[in-house]
Length: 350
Image 1 (tube, rainbow, N blue to C red):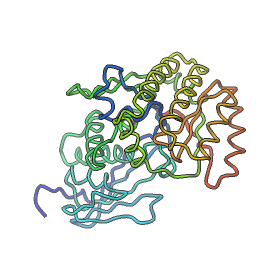
Image 2 (image 1 turned 180 degrees about the horizontal axis):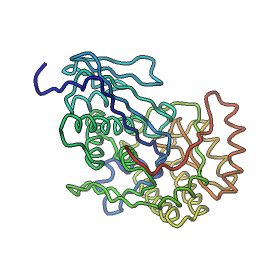
Image 3 (image 1 turned 45 degrees about the horizontal axis):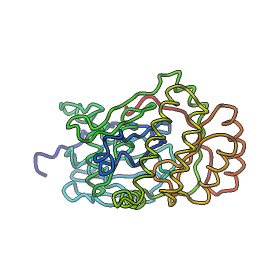
Image 4 (image 1 turned 90 degrees about the horizontal axis):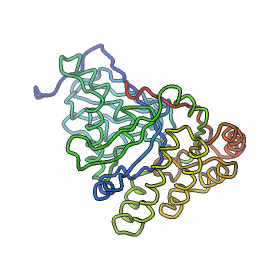
């Protein structure tokens, strides 16, 4: 084994965790869309949730890397010089290979459903980098701060996916809380403006005005995101995306002002535009849940790229309470579907 690879410390374990997210305005964080349109301040709003992904690193056989995760029936094992940069664990292998460790076992546990469109793979990557940073500190090296973790996580994921990756999932996992992100990739050292929305009391108030439901159907975002990007770049959907961006800026202002009825209104408007420009994001189950939310006066939206996964709703407390009863009854008739009991998580990666 070449000296530049480091052996994982014997009899030591290092853990880190990061929150998942729900979002509005997602896809505008993709550089190919945001960079040419910086004049309109491309924006995404996301809300970190306390359904956290925990990554634990421990010692393993010399010259080997092993990765296992709940929700995946088979783990993977590889030589550190011949790691697979495809498949479900490509990002984790890439992170370990970047740091240069061998003799390490990785275990991933997520409190969010697998492939639920809540940024799961990015969250796991951010948590892995934080755990690796703790190993680096133990080995006498300088650990990574949150900004460095975000930078590295984004570029690793963008590279391994072949481009077309956004930054919002990694940003939510790194920083937690409620944030509006304005994407400015032309800035050499700061590709975004982060607008923090609310402190602890605001997060508590929002938690009681949110409802998150898993549709029982998994999703795969890469194919869908590539189609949306292709349609945008061809000019087919550009006008609709620009309108959606305006609406999400208004949603962010209502969220900042604790105007829950306003939040519901603007989320309904974003969803109306999304139905036109991203119809493949909806499946019968998620379409029904969104319709039911709108019928009781809430706003609702699929998370991430949709096509399964999670739907989330926002509105005044009394309307959310009414929706909870409606969704509970609906989800009872769908295999594996359920309400996700969660709240806003202000902690970020730790």
